[in-house]
Image 1: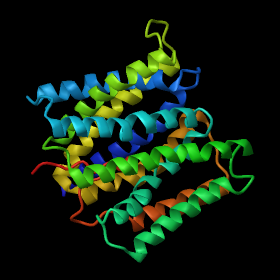
Image 2 (image 1 turned 135 degrees about the vertical axis):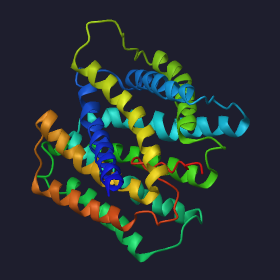
Image 3 (image 1 turned 45 degrees about the horizontal axis):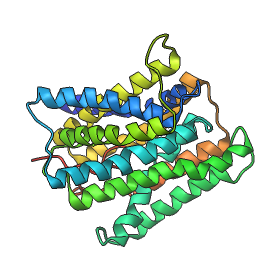
Length: 308
């Protein structure tokens, strides 16, 4: 009984912790920091955190061909493109809306897996996808849904991130992690992502000077990046201990707590249409949850496999 409560507490901590990274991301953009400069420093922090964990575990960063292909694909699909669209979108949309849209990841992963022959057709899971699309419609269509109707123009861009996370998860589910454990895999992907984003950042003139004074935006970036690395490590441990299906329930908490954190940290308030959208999308998420034998899927939709 004690162990069950400890696992439940760990699940709650992960969900509420990950949910806070959405409003923290909005705070990081509050002073006008450009997206690729933010991604650069986010990856620097992730490399330090995940690299420290990797070294402490006595592991290295594999450099064989399969590993390098994995790093490059995951860096593009799971970091560079979705993070760029996230920072652009979250600067213009409420963070609570972004937290609701992140629940689209497993909904979008279903048709991708179906198209690649990786999953069987299911009316229930198709219904989950339809509910997810209805949730987006409840945000986009009613004029009273968003604080400013002009924000609707950025909703398609905000959905790009969940789509690429779904593509990343599908890739990992199909091809695996090239024999690496999840921490090694994400450490390597972060290193390669850092190498790839640096010239883009410099060419676009989006360098962010790390010299003091540091404000709320810089603190939010450091906190959210470090939390992501630590929470991911915690998620891996929970999935290995309690199973993928139990750990995947974190997805509900990430969406719900992201909305709550946005209300607490940013003072955001939402229309009845947005609350209805969240309920519809969470119901859709329930219908597309992985089966008991499915590979572990992270709260962002990535399906990194836990070693036996």
